[in-house]
Image (cartoon, rainbow, N blue to C red; front, side):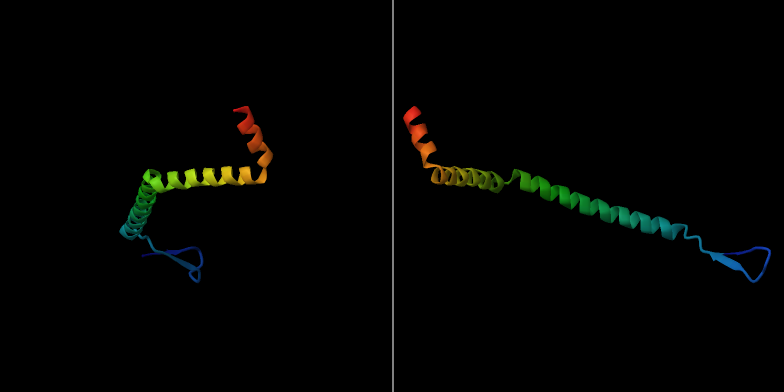
Length: 83
């Protein structure tokens, strides 16, 4: 700890230099952030490889097609007559 005094002794300012403590805290939080980033990226990769996402997309397309056909029966007749 250092003691700084200016022209007036009544105003003194103390500054604490953290040296190793600041470095240790910074290092700790950098590691924690790194861990969280690693876990998040791992989870994103795992979900990207998952078949569930593909299945949901397929079912969504099927549902949209059924709803479209149900709401516009004329389009269905036109498609069957053309094809």
